[in-house]
Length: 369
Image 1: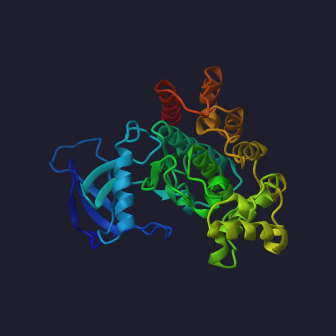
Image 2: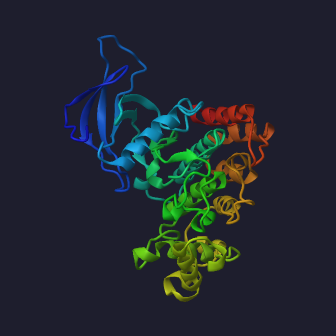
Image 3: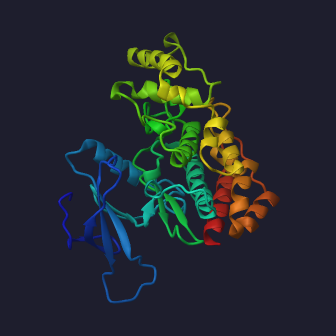
């Protein structure tokens, strides 16, 4: 169905979808997407019918796009995912290559960072959505390996009731299944050196996503002189920001390509002027205006050692997270106080169904305020 044209009507399980126009993404998505108008199938007025939908189509000839779409459908079928307000809703599976999803106005990638109260409030909103999504997936031993600004969906950002949701779940996979995953700028240190994506890896990705949105180019392949050294360049940036993280020597990693990459990274971070210009985290983040509470939160999360990195649930329950939100979100102060009075203590090693329900309840309470 990648040849859909304006006016074409798709029949879903509950509603029909009139295709309006293609949607241009960030050039990293491999499916074709369209904005569509939802059309009720009878004359009755049904208040629950949304006005718009996003139609995602995977070309049958594109194996990666088809596999990602199938994974996305399976992810929504995991318990608690379809009902969680932190994820974009899936409305319909129209056929094996086409799904209908909730429409939101924009993405974080299309919003520019400004050091103002509204932006800080938005940061708190999308961080809570992202980390709550991590908690839900971790409960099923799954991880999202595709956190990036283009996959944080937003609506109402010019109001006091901004909505943030996690979208594009096609790269949600079982813990330990994918290697060399995550976008370069959001890739965790342990993934760069040959380990699979696990729960701590997606926690790093969320915080790195925020840092890169605030200060573009500080992580990842931005200004890399050649694609062949993208991995080494990205590792060197992490080492410059966090000097206590040691890039392992070649004999400590597996695979000839990775051995070359780590060896190059160890040299680049000491020789390249562009990389030498990157200062340790506290100094580098002074180059951009942000509240100290936000800087403290990023430092709390961006721990290069995955064993010492806080879990998603620990972040949500942390003093650093509460402090990063409270000065800038007067609407949320009541909920922050409530969170302090009934803390959620969750270990990084896992959590019970009751704890998951607690996290979801607080997220939904915040979004319905």
